[in-house]
Structure formats: structure tokens, C-alpha cells
Image 1 (cartoon, one colour):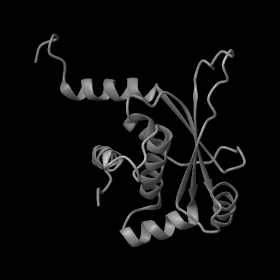
Image 2 (cartoon, helix red, strand yellow):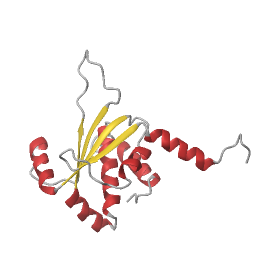
Image 3 (cartoon, one colour):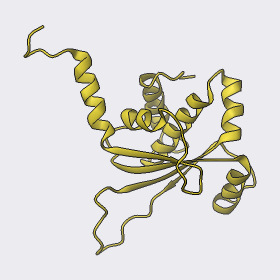
Length: 166
């Protein structure tokens, strides 16, 4: 290998690092307090599609809080595993923030733990799966209306991120 022909692994790491700087991920407890979620922010930022430029907050909440959010914003009184709340667009005439806010992803930790056990995953892996799903919704993908586009992209990204695809 010559200096003109860099190691392919270095190229991959460099590519992931530059993508990671496009998306900033903060994990909170749902009240804005930072919460430890080892590896989740870097994993999501490194795996995110190129269109994911800006900031995202991933809020880890209990099932009761998720039920309340579903009732308030969707009119259903049940717990779902993940919700996405896209940021409001910047009003005309105002300057956008230097780093745009894409929105919030809310994960129900109790539901995620049950799903992880049933699927043979760790809770961390399930949080990653749900955060990726939520991010794709923030980017405008909709698995209920896009003829399988979101599902195909999510499978490809999960495979790339080391998660099961099933």
C-alpha cells in the first residue's frame, strides 16, 4: 500500500466521522436532563443518512409518560415504543439557527425493554433500533405511505449498524 492508496478502513472511519459531525444527538430523561445511553449518540450520528443535518434529542421516558404523550398528541390511550416530533419550521423572515433542530424522538423504556427481551436483543440495541426508526420519521419517511422505501432504508442502516434486520 502506498501513501497515495490509503487503508480502506481509514477511509470508512473518516467518512463516518464526517457524517457524525452533521448530526448532533443528545439523550435526555424527557425533562431535559442528560441521561447516559452509552454509544447511542455516536452510533446514530455515524449511521444517519446524509440528509440528517442538525440536532436531535432522544428522550428516554417511562411507559406512563408515553401513554400521556400518545393521548395528548395522537388521541390514543396506549403505550407505543417510539414517537417522533419534528421541529417546527423556521417562520418566514427569521434566520434559521446555525445548527437546525430536526426534532425529538421519544422512546418508552419499559416497552423497549419488553420488546428487547422478546427479540433477544439488549436494551441498548433496542434503543438504537427505535432511535433510528424515529430519526427516519423526522427526515420525512413514512412506512405507512411510502411503498416500502422507509422499511428498505431502515433495514439497510440496521445491517450497517450491526443490528438484526428481522
